[in-house]
Length: 515
Image (cartoon, rainbow, N blue to C red; front, side, top):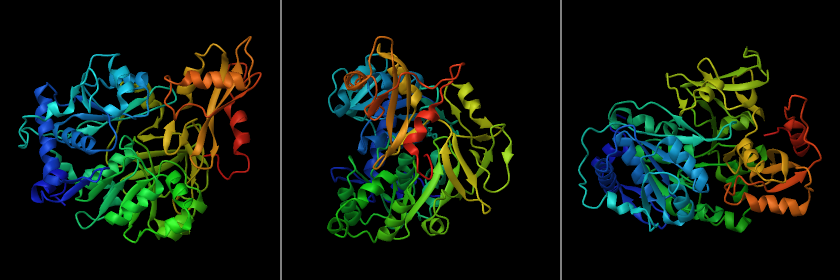
C-alpha cells in the first residue's frame, strides 16, 4: 500500500474519476491534482507558511475537496466551519483559529460578510461576495506542477464543550511528505474492510464540515475510490445515486436511516442497492429496531463505530451486532476503551456502569487549541472522555447507557446547552434557564429550553415567541430551542447547582436509555 495517497494515485491514473460533484460533473484525478497544486502555489504566493490556517464555509463541492488536498500537501491546517452558523459564531472560530485565509461560498453571503467584518483576514469567495476576492484568483496563472517542499497538513475541527465556546481539536503536524503517511488518510475505510483501488464508490450525503464525513470522504479519495457528493441529502435522491453509481460505502447517521425507512414501499423497491458493502453509521445511538430493518433491507452492510473528533473508538460489523444488539462495538486495534468511576478508579468487572474513556494506542494525542484546562479536564492519564456513560460486557463489547455531560445530539449534530443558555440569559425577560435534549422521533433529540422568567415577566406563548424570534441572528437555527417551557423556579441547590436531570428525566421516561 506504499503507493496509496491521492497524489500518487492521481499521477499513476490521471483519468480515474475521483469525484462526482452534486451537479453531476465527473472530475478526473489528474484535474483535481492540478488545481490542488495551483492552490498551493497561489496560497504560498500570498504568504501562507507551514502551520497556518485556512478556514472555509463551503457546501459539499469541488472547491472544498481542492482546498482539503492543498492543505494536506502544504502543511496547513484546514478548519471546516458549519455553514449553518451565523456571523458572530463564524467570526469566533476565525479569530480563535488565527485563520490567515477565509474562503466562503456566495450562498452564505450574509453570515460570511458579517463574520469577515469583525476581523482582519484575507477573504476569498466561490461566487460573488462583496469585499471578497474571487476564489479563482488563487489559481489563475498558477502552474499545475508539483509544489516544492511538500509536507503533510491536517484538519482542525471545532467541537463545542461545556464552557459553551467551540474549541479546535488540534494535532501536531508530522513533518513528513504526505506519501509517507498516505495509508493513515484511508485508515477508517481500511478498518471497515474496504479495499483500496478496486471498484468502490463512496457517497457523501452529509456536510463535509463534520469530522467523520470528511475523514471517510477524504479517506475514500486516498485509497482510490470515487466519491459522489450530495449537496442536500434526501432519502430518494440517495437511493437514486446509489443505483446510478453502484455505490459501495458511505458514512451515515441514524436520522437518515429513519427517513429512508419512512419512504413508501414502491419507492424503496424502485432502486437497486445490491452494490452496497459497508454503510457505516455513528454520531448518535441507532434504535435497534431501525437498525434491524435497515439490515433486512440493505443486507448485512450496516456497520457502526463509536468515536469522537478527539480520536479513539470502537467498531462493530452488522453480523456481530445481530449477536450483540445494542452494542457500539469493541475497541479498534489501535485504540483502548476503559470505564472509570467518579473517583477516577478504573472499573474492571463486566457490566459495571461508569464514564467511558478512550485512548489511541499509537502515541497519538491532541489538544484543545489554546485551552489547556479543557484539554486536561477530560483526561485520566492518557485516556480521555467525551462524557458518555456505559459498560463493557464480559466479551469486551461496549454498551452506552446515558450521557454524563449535557450534550444534545440532533440529527447527528453535537449541540452544547451552555452556549445556548449563555445567549438566552441575555434576554431581559429570562431570569434563569436550562437547556437539554428531549426525544424526537426523526432527529433523535431536539433542543428544549426551560425558562424561569425574570421579575416582572410572565411566561407563556407570547414570551416564548418573543424569545425564539430574539434567537435569530444570535444562534444557528439547529441550536435554537424548538420550544420553551416556563417554571416559577429552576431546581437549584443552595450553592446554585442546577439539577437538570429533574427537568430532563420526565421527557425520557419509559425509554431504555436516556441518550
